[in-house]
Amino acid sequence: MQFSKYLNSLLDRAGQNVKTIVLPEGEDERILEAAHYVAERKAAKLIIFGKPEEIKAFYAKNGWGFDGIEIREPEKSPKLDEYANLLYEIRKAKGMTLEEAQKLAVNYTFHGTLMMKAGDADGMVSGANHSTADTVRPALQIIKSAYKDRSVSSAAIMVIKDKPYIFSDPAIIINPTEKEMADMALASAETAIQFGLEPKVAMLSYSTYGSGHGDMVDKVRNATKLAQEMLENSPLKGKAFIDGELQADAALDEVVAKKKAPGSQVAGHANVMIFPCLDVGNISYKLLQRFYGAEAYGPIMQGLNAPINDLSRGALVEDIVGMIAITAIQAVK
Ligand SMILES: CC(C)(COP(=O)(O)OP(=O)(O)OC[C@H]1O[C@@H](n2cnc3c(N)ncnc32)[C@H](O)[C@@H]1OP(=O)(O)O)[C@@H](O)C(=O)NCCC(=O)NCCS
Image (cartoon, rainbow, N blue to C red; front, side, top):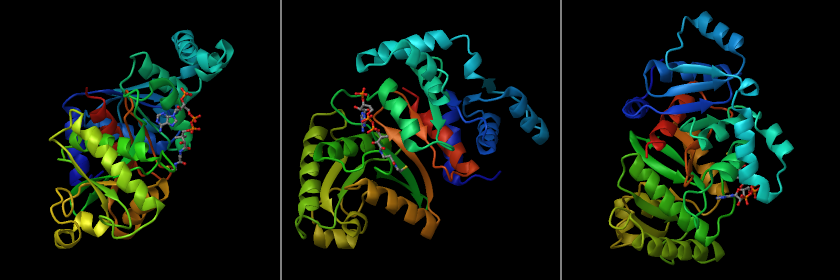
């Protein structure tokens, strides 16, 4: 299979520090195929959940080997009790009983998440056949936010004219508060650095520096101020720039930026786009992908203690390959 230049660069980078990634959806041939390509490139070690005889038959039919790939049936795991107890300890204060934890420990998404919590895997990619909420909720409940006072959000890496951009949030926070937007800005700056960009974060709006009015403009303006203050007190100080509120043309076009946002360190050069709500974040990345053929990797969760990433149910094999490589890169501490 031919991969894009960007995807090849992700696979090379993942291979520099090989991590173990869980793929709970071994019933899906796209997952099995993607696992083969990742293992062949030695970009990650993979643990696939599913029926060994079915998975082995699919690999044999294609003439593929199992180097770097392990198959597991969670219901037969010798660690089931350990994982159930772990889940019970984490969730008992929220009212979970041991019986409920034992039932959930065989659920494939929970099982994969618990493997990570127990230190038996470094990351997980799921969602080819499950909703975002099914993948994300166990992650939020068990792996949790890396920062006590910050929310978890998501991002998509968009490759447009061979240049990568970070878009946030396409998947998690439906109507972010000012604080949640500020959290998103900092988390996205961290994601940008992780993927080799010097973050110039645009807090997007239909207004630039007060040209328009309304509650949504106020929200983005206040979120920008908060994000700038948080940046000043974070290790990202001097490594990232945040500005807003900016319209998309002012964020991206130098000529427009000079007119609408003179003196901005971000306008005209933005490579991280923060959207005011999930509608805009989700619709924009899908429009770019469908109209323009932009490569889109995501949603990538950001701000979690360890990487769990969600797949779109329409994901192609190369999208899954990309998400496994991204998850492996995020798993490097
Ligand atoms: C992500 C999502 C599933 C969270 O689910 P939820 O039902 O709101 O989750 P809950 O309120 O039950 O919270 C579960 C736990 O996660 C935590 N949590 C929820 N959202 C969080 C966030 N953004 N950051 C950190 N923690 C979060 C809660 O505090 C709670 O923790 P606790 O149980 O330990 O107290 C929900 O926000 C959602 O459905 N988002 C939209 C997803 C979607 O449809 N996307 C479409 C495009 S792909």
